[in-house]
Length: 276
Image 1 (spheres, rainbow, N blue to C red):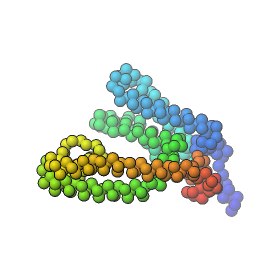
Image 2: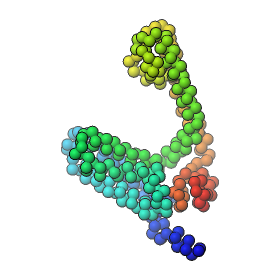
Image 3: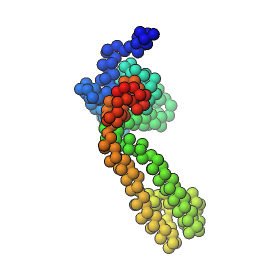
Image 4: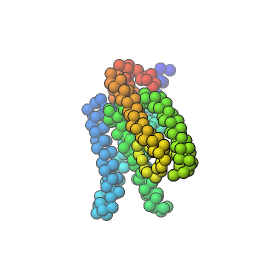
């Protein structure tokens, strides 16, 4: 039984080596692979930006098209290699970054058949999907990992804060609806709440403006209140970042489930329990 189990779990040496290079970043070749991939991702973003400029697109149509296809083929090769060497293929394919990797490839191929159906709208919508490539950068930036962890730890506090803000704008919008007597743009409570939101966030479109003296006084109070409220989520996340500096995340990846977020003193994977 043990021999059969070992044979099922056996992975060729070249797959293990490829896994270390592609999924890990604590080796020379692993870092080199990440750096090359990072350059390709940034290059693809630059190409998409250049394609949106009419003059550049008209002068270098072939170059931009060929460059896009070269990068797409390289992304496709990377995606296939990740599936081949991953010990948990289904886990990678349906993971967050697995889906992002797939979305980095699909738009170029979809654009081959999309132009026949409302070309302007569909192609633009498909090209917008290429923005998902930017999300792949978080895998290689340590500061991004720290920020994600801090946001995750601050979620409950920020959620409670957002509920408080929601109640506040409903209350202030209702008060302004009464104060302005349903006139001067405050024709309904939802419209008044909309005004309260853009005033509290200090956006101030100016499409709805209070006319009464009491309304102007309340508007002034909401504007001043907005400056203090905006700083609260920043303070919550900043506190979590400072707290997390003493418990940094390392870049080692679990060989079993590919989890990459582990505390510096962890001996076992926090996701599957596999020894690190």
